Length: 124
Image (cartoon, rainbow, N blue to C red; front, side, top):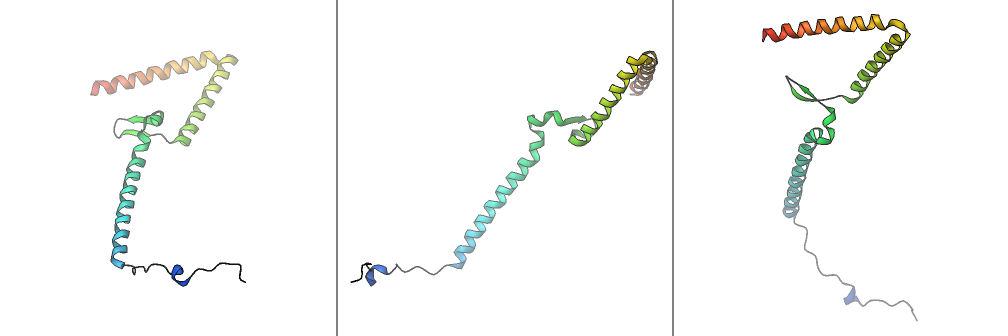
């Protein structure tokens, strides 16, 4: 005898399926496409607002003409490295006896900048 039970032919038959409706599938696809477009628009808006999140506020720089601008991180890091190097050089020079020359130059630069700023303020 056969040890594997078999199903009767009536039990094996599946209920009849309706043939696929192309217009229903197309309308479902259209609805899904619209949903995805809405989600994509929402994500684009969120991405546009992300740089102005308070978490990234230290990366903002106020510009009188353009408003808030984002700071380019790597470029700003290079600029700050140059400033740090210049300050370290100035400190070494001051420690080596060139302090009078450096301070005199700084005072002259400050006076010149003050004169330019005052001229500019008078023209306003």
